[in-house]
Length: 586
Ligand SMILES: Nc1ncnc2c1ncn2[C@@H]1O[C@H](COP(=O)(O)OP(=O)(O)OP(=O)(O)O)[C@@H](O)[C@H]1O
Image (cartoon, rainbow, N blue to C red; front, side):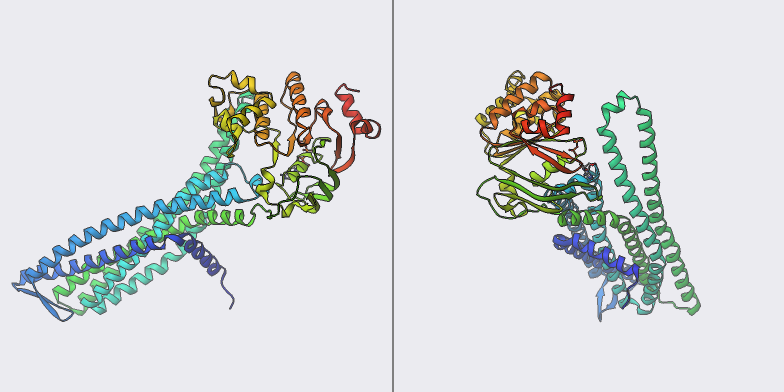
């Protein structure tokens, strides 16, 4: 059977919701049951108390019959008092279940999102717009927990309504049926409004994410913003995005809020109709009329709660959907890797390797090479030639689009990722330091790096003297992102981090780009000492850094045009000669 598009959407929402409720089902049920029982008690209390009051007015000592039993007014008052006490206890139980539910959902959704992100591939993490994950983890998760608590409230309101209607049937079936019919009409009238709320909320969720991305981007442009004096432009842009997000949110809020007055208008019309019927039929049983009126009013108020809860749910579901879609995207793009442990880190061979980015930009074509143990390989080439992309392939962060990359004869795709990363050191173009001590920054969350290994790594990276000059040495707390260090110091700290776990393969992506001549010379000396004990791959624009290399790979426009010793390249590669000439070496 052909399904309506709206139905598919509806079932998608329901499946996202039921997935999110998942392990919290127990609490949702506890919340619903305690609220339902509370509502039943309240309904019984109202029926008893109305009937008792009328009996007292009429001078009668009994009320009923209820379910075939008559009750004395004294017993009815006693039962009423017990019902009230029980209702209070159940109220507290629902409150406790509700607050626990919110806290648990916040935790599970945050864990689900952060674990999925951390387990996803570098390609997905790198493509993620900045600030998006933070926004999802904070305001989106709060809305998700709110959505599920709202769902529990909706279930509660629905069950309570059913409890009241059941009580109503006992008192007077015909009037209760009329109330039920009125409620069904109201529910149907509000369906299109709820659909609209959902559509508007989806637009609002998108605006929120765009806003978060912009805020994050603007935040990272701080120094340029000040230097170029464009703060006002930034403020204008922020204002524009703030207004856009606020307008979209207001539209959702307005539409959600219209549901209450719309509901009330229709509900009161139904009451008006009911009373008109009574007037018309001349029905006069005061006890029944009083009881039915009370139940009807209370039922309508539960109906109102149900409407409000469903409206809020419609507004929150797009946020839940965004979180679930993101988790699915991260999980689908899990960092790949096998379970094999090659006998050695070398030879490292590439055979006909191509790499294409998702935007179809071909970054590498037909790359073939073989790197032997303890070789020092330099990689040079014009900007944008594909050098960093190749480094990411060597680190196992990206997979070739075609061709193979092998470690001691084993395809990299089959190699155990943790085995590989524990044997590879990496120094990126920009040193990324975090708020923490010098020691923590060098250890970088890895276990088994003792104080001696720290000192040795710092010495080999030529940063030991700088660290010892700090007020608390290795225990000195660095500012956010290592803000109190110079660019060169940050780069050398990043080299110490790469060396701390004694890697067998060291990949350096322009390690000396931020260093002065003297520091660069020291790093060069360090590298020439290091290469005695490990295989080194260095991408460098500074030709002097490549002095220590046995062979140099020249990459031009994604292709490997040469891979030879420096002496041979002087003869065979125009690019190499030009680079030496620019560096004043030739
Ligand atoms: N994440 C990405 N998505 C799409 N294209 C990319 C991405 N990263 C790099 N590229 C493109 O791939 C090509 C190779 O980039 P790569 O960073 O590897 O060059 P590079 O030789 O390291 O450059 P540079 O020396 O300037 O750092 C470039 O054209 C670049 O625009």
